[in-house]
Length: 90
Image 1 (cartoon, one colour):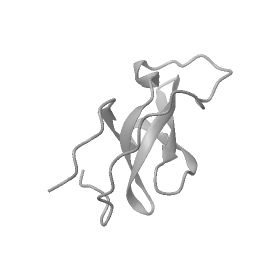
Image 2: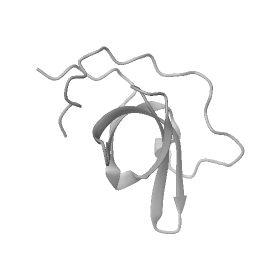
Image 3: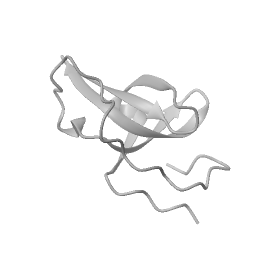
Image 4: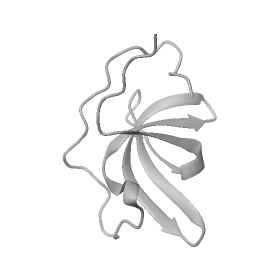
């Protein structure tokens, strides 16, 4: 998956608070980490803030870096990048 076009700004630090609470996370990806989400507007840089499994569906909550918007997505729409800031695309 390629970097969102025109967005070469550094990735922000991962949050230490502000996670969605009240329900137990049900996926091992429940730690805050960097991600890229393929949505209707193309690929967007995001931070994973929640992950759950309901039956056979894995869903995640993301905070979009460019806008601060929070979105829900299915796990197949998301590329998880880990807890270290990703390197900028060449």
